[in-house]
Length: 435
Picture 1 (cartoon, rainbow, N blue to C red):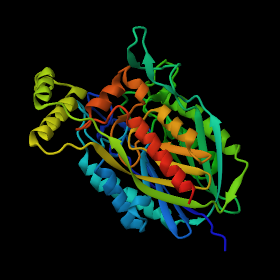
Picture 2 (picture 1 turned 90 degrees about the vertical axis):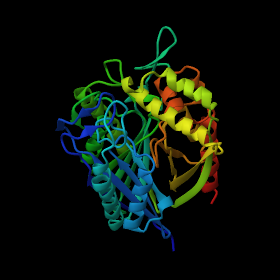
Picture 3 (picture 1 turned 30 degrees about the vertical axis):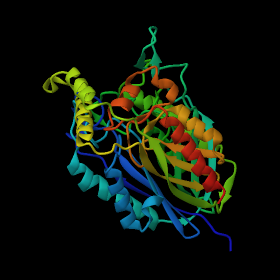
Picture 4 (picture 1 turned 120 degrees about the vertical axis):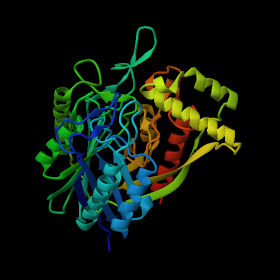
């Protein structure tokens, strides 16, 4: 008997209260109103007795240990294996404070543990409870909603703006699931760009991707989830020449992106009935830099100045330096790599590759180029968040993302982490495909 694919979808409203601190930018800002609601949307899949979950939350990041807690609660609510779950963040900068923002807001633990986690588990349970036989269609379309945001200035420095010469991924992918008789179940949109079009705004909003999602839902009749791709060096292409603006610009860009998503959905020609699903979970080693001597770290700490007068990201840099000093002072062996437990899910011609970083576009383009799957969907800020993962060729240029890559983890990743991420995932993709 031929196995069939089953798909279900669940959604919870995770909008924080007006007055909550928003995550992104310093100094911190409190929400003054709600422009549009935030959601966690979960797709459940079943094939040949195996179940998986792919979830997307309209928040900035979900880092460790929170992502493990969310996955554990989803697993408990659904009996889906922990390692068969992918959860990503859309990376809106107009959502709740999911972690400390240096110089801005502190983590909203009440929201995290008493609202976000249980509502995510509830959405997962709803998705599994609605599983039904499905067929699957996929289409791609070029979109200029995004652009490389590492602006190359006249003097060779890198700023945050628009770089028409820089790498970005212009492909928007839409995956649609319907019942065998064509009734809509759910859609998934994949594209890579920061959700920062609203800028330093006082409204709670999904940003530009919310308008896009709502438009495809209205046209298709199916609940739609957005998963962000290579947003590390890519931002929304705004008419002001930047990748931050205001709420009006975010809504305008979202409308344009929505047209692309609807056109992609309408262009689906082939539907897969009984698309096979596979899942693989294995470790990928990511190299870590050795730490400087204790004297050098103390010198760096003194160089930052009086900690009581530090602002913005310098606060976090000071905190990380203190952590590094304690690591070296302890005399314990320093780790040489981080063993990343990777989960890859494939459904028919599509493979989903979670990356727990704000990943640069060249990295995801390389993975897609060498993947055995016709459609390879790399997700940023998925199953964790370790800040930025730049391509190695950009490290020498510096800029904000490179500084964060070097400064924001207690032990920094090595410059060639890109190659380990690419080769490790290609190895797993080939192994999964050959099963």
